[in-house]
Length: 244
Ligand SMILES: NC(=O)c1ccc[n+]([C@@H]2O[C@H](COP(=O)([O-])OP(=O)(O)OC[C@H]3O[C@@H](n4cnc5c(N)ncnc54)[C@H](OP(=O)(O)O)[C@@H]3O)[C@@H](O)[C@H]2O)c1
Image (tube, rainbow, N blue to C red; front, side, top):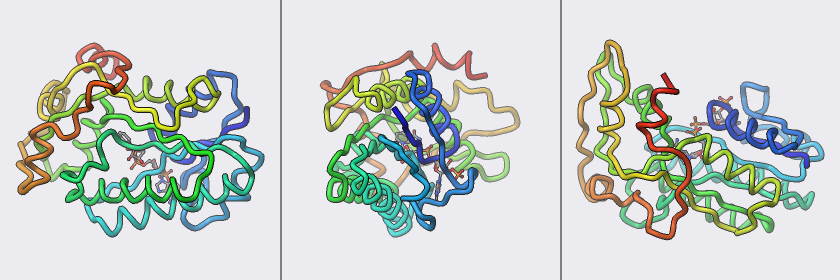
């Protein structure tokens, strides 16, 4: 099986490693490898790929920017996969399409992305996961102001990125065939608790109470999966020592 993973950083690498471990030939593409999904020729870049995993990202809270980026990425990849009869595997987020979280521009962008993918990709699998354990670290980088780290009030069921990458690899090799796959970690906690459990030398976590309906929804657990969602991987406390 020849697979392409579009997206760099920790998620792209984890997915590429998991797919390679199942015996596939994998190419990882992102700007750091010289490929820009919204500017470059996706057809040419995909080569003879049979499966394309889309794991691109742009951190923004702007609905306009998120929607523009995610839909352009998906339309480009979806059109190229459709033309060659390849499968398209889109990485998304559990509950990101719920109405009460659409006030968060990033999730509005992910919702638009899922809709665009459904419209353009005939051979689509959407893999939705909850927030990864690494999300707590991402938040400390994205929300850092001098020594202070703003930690939004969020109740979540975080999951190991490696476990999610394994699920995506199963989809790539055809071991999972459902059109939508949803996975979560084994326990419900908060981003605050996760951040407090991490070693953050020189940094001071500060709770951020997001105002309005979206903030209330985040705190109340709108991102926590329903019972039917499959649980994969270890608990955060079991994973954390190996991440240090
Ligand atoms: N973080 C979570 O907890 C979580 C949970 C569930 C699902 N997801 C979803 O998983 C996906 C990846 O998330 P992430 O947190 O890893 O995102 P991210 O760090 O914001 O971005 C992933 C990668 O996308 C690449 N990228 C950005 N713009 C690009 C472009 N124009 N062309 C090609 N590649 C581009 C970047 O690599 P280069 O800099 O090399 O281009 C970046 O490393 C997102 O769709 C996100 O919504 C995330």
